[in-house]
Image (cartoon, rainbow, N blue to C red; front, side, top):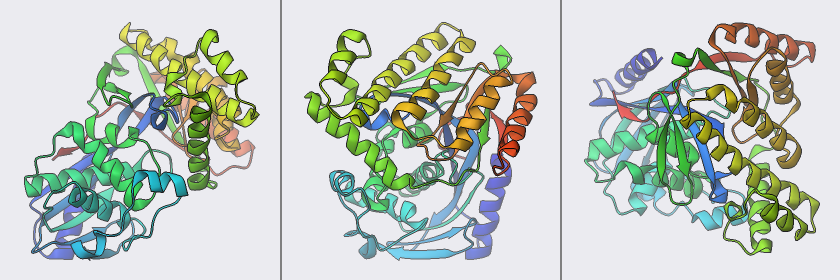
Length: 402
């Protein structure tokens, strides 16, 4: 899918600026196989990169000015260094307030300006640039379209400016752009996946140490596929609810006297006493999800290392139940899609992404993908939901110059 998107970005650049770009850079959306809301708790996640990508066609601009055209909005915005250098905040401030600090560039442009701001804050002299952006990463589906945009823009600016920014440091800077400028208190998983994934692998990320391991996830050779279903459920209060979940986890960690919930083990000798120390039943539910979800990530990695991909199915399904009952981030559309996929023979299924709408993934036999997708569509229709959109996904590469 990168070919047509790259062509559209190039065509947009030529139309807007009247000359060819110096290059094109792409970064993918991601599906998180398992490990939801564990990243900002210093835990473990296991995403993989989608074939759907955001492409940035770019060329140097005079001075420290940036002009950005978006195919999605059809608009072009411009900003200068002086307009963004005082517009961000610290990640701690963003987390504490649950909302972004005022920024002079808003909307989709905040993700682009945020990358420039984060680079400047880190001490880089960022080259002025003209950019044109096209994408086939679905918006609002929980597939990290924002991280794909940030990562593509970051990769382009680093290359255009010859900036000395090692790849293992780039996800943290892109996360800083989203936390401190766009005002979204996300963890580091999405940017890590968009930048560091490899084709045919899932990215096992320790969100505390930032150590990564590329876990073989060759679905095609096993006759399997990941069916991704965008339920097209409207996201409901996602920003405020996401921040509330993060605050609850930090409150619980403080009450338990641990740096993060990652430090509570999932065995009965550790988890049960920890839950007993929390008087608030809501905090107990939040803690139980995070702690058991971390263990499910570790168990999934163990099975994939052993070449037993179908056996991860029950872990995926247990993850969904935990998100539904303990973390309370699912909605009827995604619950219906999961139930329908399982009834149609999926090995396992779960919501993926931050929640309150978005996508479901199901591990299926490759030759059953269309049948399972049809069953999910029928179940959604029976409930009067918006018709979903399904596609199969194979793990792709991270950000790159085309």
